[in-house]
Length: 157
Image (cartoon, rainbow, N blue to C red):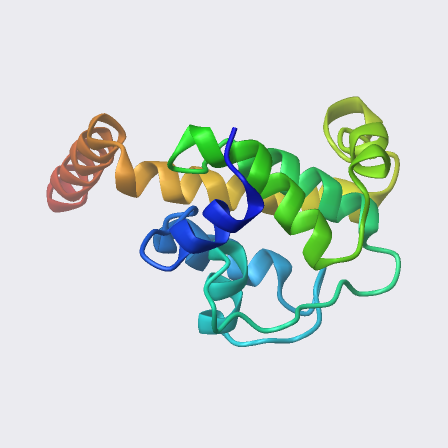
């Protein structure tokens, strides 16, 4: 486990969350879960850059934020920093870990009790899927094969 100081110092030269994933997540979060911001500010916020802005959750979005943090923590590129990343994200929104731990799965799966939760969960999964297609060579190869087949079929018509 690293210290909080090491975590923030490491952020100066390292991205905890890949910028491509941040870009995929931006539209899911901006003006929906967090106050309106720029893409660059969003990326800096998720990666704890020194220039990161203060980002505020919109009213009523705390539980969706918990789910967001839980899902995105799986993509922290250096797993040694995953717990620190979660704690820093919670701290950035003035939330304690106990509250997060109690409610992090409230929005996922069968616990998705509202249409808004279901829509958020789907949008989050779709954003992560788009990211995975771009970074996973096997998925990317499958996608290219799909488009090749599609072009061939269109030429036949």
